[in-house]
Length: 579
Image (cartoon, rainbow, N blue to C red; front, side):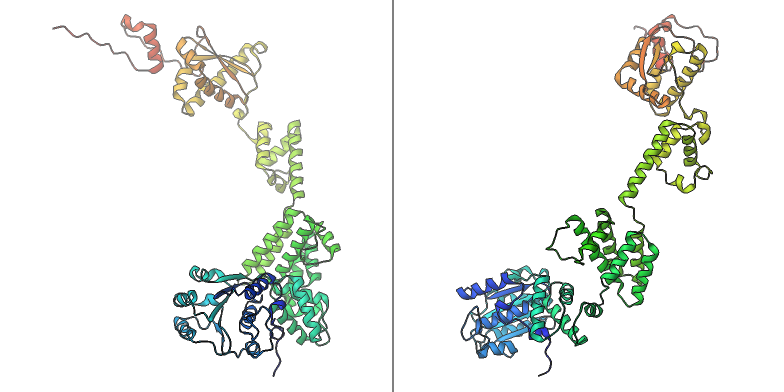
């Protein structure tokens, strides 16, 4: 007989030899011991975790000469035939190549016949999710009520593709990924029994690369044994699997910590020239950064597998990054790995990801920016020539006082503050851009107070019209601003109605808001009643025209006030003649 691969030679032959699936082996052994044997089983789990091996062990346990038994002897004719794959009572069906309704119909016809040698006819349907919908429908009735001598074992790596009608007719067993330690222990046993010289580091590399599948691990070990008969080392495993290696990953990590884009790009280019896969480079970088993140969070952690067990390196590298930086780096690398699948040139997403990490913004940079803004605010509060220069540079970055890059980095809020507090001439603002500063009337000269009060009053009236508050303007315009201080504006009215209406909360709040906008400070409005002073500057007096002779009734004060408020003219209603 020719050479037999390790994964076939070391296939488990009883439940005790199953690796990493104790929950399943214990349940099946108890079922066999108590005679509670189901007619259909569904084995679901990742590749290489023992689904087909468990199905064959179950078939031997059912048909062993000493059975049904939880411990098949592996020595009787039935056990030997099942192990060799020549039993007439155990049928292995590959659903990937026999997925149609015709194959299932043929299977239903053979189900009727009694076993040839054993007690049960066992149908092992591998990759059952590949069956068509019609084939599943054809299998339903037989799967639900098979003959008493038939047991179905369905195996799949994609249980979500199995119809619910099939699920409900089977006992489901979920196979888990096998742990690294369990795989290493099994590989050590296989290497010792096969006479292979393998280092512990090499076995651990193989176990990690197998990703929970013992069959994959045995295949890699078999391949490494063929690579070199002198012995299997970690370097030879990396060479065979195309791994990057710790030294290269540590070198790239240090370059990323220093934000040395040149060194990172040169290192990536050198790895590509050595024939390394770009995707593998990013994957190992992500694994190492994950190790740094976990080590930074819990330095004493020992039960989680890390990319590197050298705690000196982990401590040194993790100290160079913050936690948020490590999380962002892992996200960036994972996104680049996904983009590589569809990129026409794989190195482009890798280079973009590594450059983005080199030019990252850390918490220290953000803190420095916050301190810089705080310093600028301090200068702003102190006033002086420095504030005027910074404000001018924020508006016109080409001024030689501050470089353009510095001015561009000033936040918009700071620029606005500079504009509001700088000298108008420095930013080429109109004279009216900054509100006038008022002093109490008692401390002002009469001419200066009159000019300022009229200017502010005109702006208040115009702002009321511009903001659409025409009804408020119609009422407020009947008064006159007679006093304006830093805290209070006094409006005097000649009539009681506009004075009372303006003093109410709604109108007064609107007027005070306009005063705040115009004066740049909170001003309270107070309404008084008294004789009107000379006409306001904001209200243009009408040209004198000869007044026609009016009816004495039209001279009534209430009627004249209504006309003044709402406009229009008075039409006298003539009395109807009595019949």
